[in-house]
Image 1 (cartoon, helix red, strand yellow):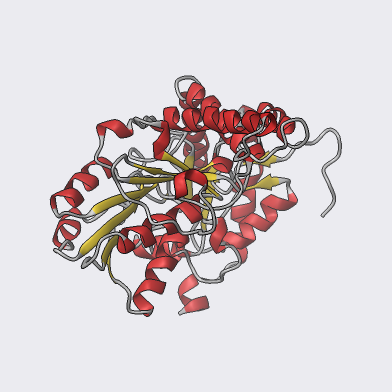
Image 2: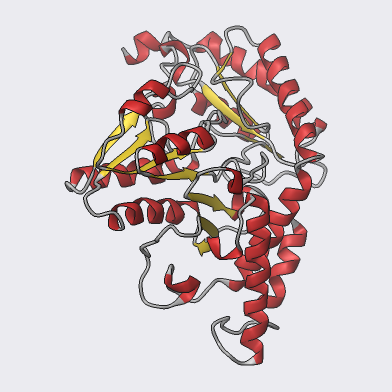
Length: 397
């Protein structure tokens, strides 16, 4: 595909997949490639400068999450590693507890681990259903706990629909059953305010590249007093909780990205929400049969998932791509799959719309021009595809 010319800019509305690194974040990372390049575990002066940068970043991430101590932040390679660490650790550190409670709509980095543990006979997994709006079945959740439950792991916000789970309440229920509680907050961090100290959440996963930071760096919050079994062995880094020489440039960038995200919560988030609402409403007004997937009130401010009747999302996305507009049909970790999203199936989206869901996810870089460009071309694209389509029931039934 040809690159857009100098007078054309991409409209990027796939920020739940990844965000563009803030230029200030990139600048903050550069000194740690050459000037402060030393290993932060070294005791000489060059190592001390790198270690100080890590300490600053740890504090910045702690502040964004509303955690109580810098020591509760363990740097990882990203959200997937953090999720894996939390799940494996909960089983390893609690003898006699071998059950996990999760939902049917989690990110693949949680569901795949649970499926592996189940297939190898290492854990019994309870998968809690959701309703058509993406709300968790709380009664089924309460009933899933037993004396053998090691961990409840639930996303703070869904990556495809943006629907927010009541994680603070879920954590309290888990604790009453004697289980640990972990939340995948990769999509939620930096988009909604967090005060972990006011909750009973034991562990939380976060990733820098979802908040205009670098890829390949994330963190696992581990509440003070909760024991953690390392997933990666071979060194004493991260207080013996995650071995391997620390990625100092990325950690420095992550810290600043967290600080910038926290600063943007009051001003940018309301603006992003207004843009999202405008995009949603005008699409619904101009495309017959379009429907919003998930709860329109209880969701992330940047996310809208709209399903179009009797068309394939891949066809829409291809036409949008030709118009230099980037969107998504769901999780980037499931890209390439021909099957409908497990999240949409769990929500029992009508068959006529099941394969036509497109996710638009905005960021603080999004602007009115982005929304106007989508509204200029999308309705015509969908109508063209609908005119050529055959009913989904006939195509796949």
